[in-house]
Image 1: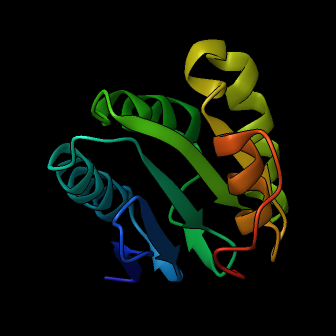
Image 2: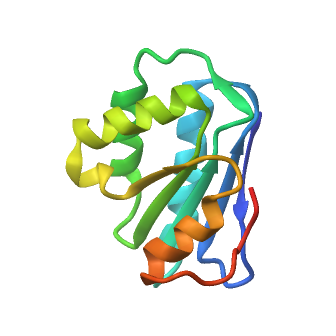
Image 3: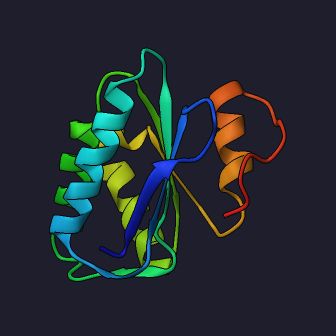
Amino acid sequence: MPIINQWDDEAETIIYGEFSGKWTWDEFFETINKSSEMIGTKPYRCDVIANMRPGTMESAAPALYNAREAMRMFPENFGLLVVVINPLIGMLANVFKRFDAQLGSKVVSVRLGRAGPRLDRKRTGQRFQVMRRV
């Protein structure tokens, strides 16, 4: 499977997912299920960084619907999804924020190398050290 999905920090508060190569929607939902299970085992807030820049999806057609379904699968203690984007994913993320404003408020899209600072600001309201350079 061309998707890596693992804890990014020792405290297990951030999941890092990397989508590389050509991935399918079945693989996408398998990854979301795994992330949801990982987050569900924790009694505290957990965030997700999804680096979608190196990969390509099999079909963009159901992307908004699938993104909404994926966001609904996360447990209550899910905090924020930071998506490292390529131009297509960036466009879809912006449309998704309008498509479902409630779930879209939990999505931040960033260019390569900016996920750590953005996640820190959204989590705490101020800038701390960069946790990860994606």
